[in-house]
Image 1 (cartoon, one colour):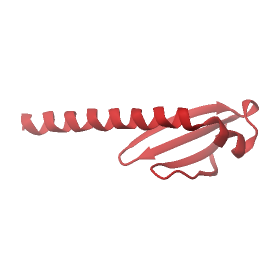
Image 2 (cartoon, one colour; image 1 turned 180 degrees about the horizontal axis):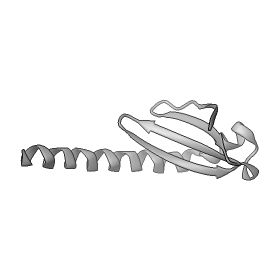
Image 3 (tube, rainbow, N blue to C red; image 1 turned 135 degrees about the vertical axis):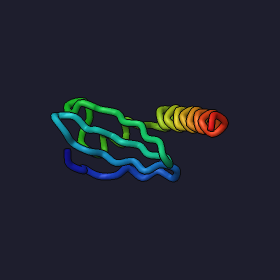
Image 4 (cartoon, rainbow, N blue to C red; image 1 turned 90 degrees about the horizontal axis):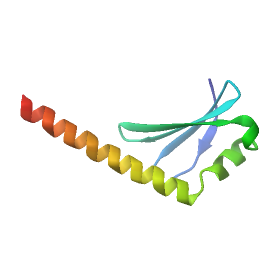
Length: 83
């Protein structure tokens, strides 16, 4: 897997990798990450990958990160109460 580039975003670290005829897009927010695999023949390079993740898609990504954060926080609280 090799790094193809990064997609700028104010809240997330977004890294694009190339592997096995797919772009692997890793989005990171704190201790959480989401990964998406896109066939290379469905987009035109890094610019195509960037266009693939439009504003509506990114809003859902951010909502999902928020849900993940709340789940992690609840699990952490539960684990600390059991100690």
